[in-house]
Length: 389
Image (tube, rainbow, N blue to C red; front, side, top):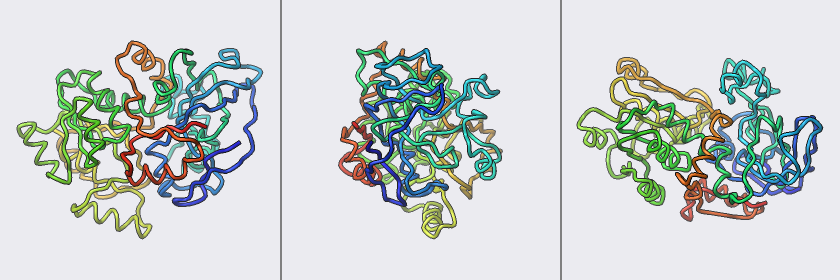
């Protein structure tokens, strides 16, 4: 089969690799019909995430048609269309029983490696380094779905891929981020980053009762999409974000702040951002954390900072004194995708949202390597790429 394969920093190729096989009775194999490039994939592309190995198959936002079934699988049959969440859960451990699926205790075979880096191991993830299991990803013609009955959602035949494929990651991620922000009715919510996850944070904030949403970015097409989602916008190239938020909130600050940027923040003209970039260029740091620092400084006292943006290592110069003295709450984490998929499918079916609004590029799988660069460099109005194997 053809798949997008990592060979080093900035080096993704469309290679021929062996087809996946059913390895456990709980597996199914899908023929991938749609798969996406995620902002998190760029951390692999730029080699900020450790433990990548040449030959790793990328991708964690797939869906497709079931073509093979393990002997113990009864929930699905050949021909079913399913969406596959990016995190792999067992459904039976302490964390899974609490619906904390991305913290699953059993699905990361490289748990010891992850424990050394993080203290405890997260769940296995598709296509996301050997720190999270070394599993083959879904930017491929076929995918082995592990523990399928826990980790897949059947999709009605009358729903096109483009409306449901984002149930694999970015829609649940944006929704959980808004939920983690602890939004109360009428709250002002500020969202840093108007990429795909940020766009779903904006729309999810409205669903959860926000009275006002303010979106922060500098890319014109991203800001325009945020405005189409009824957000007020701040272009950080034109104004100082803190000053503008103070003005908009009469000096109080936003009630809830969401960092949908993560470890590769691009901010020009800020001393901390310049230092971050210099450190990453010489290999002494992995995270550029300006957005997180700014969210902490901007958030109102006793507010909440929600962090769906991915961080890798040890971001420094976090204003923890401000965080503590302002009495802030922070909630973070990889998304417990399985908890949200059915709920959000029902919202799509009820026409509360059509997630396909975020798609700017639909391409063939073999166009994927070039699409990585286009997406990373924010060229050609690229916000979200869907690949069609």
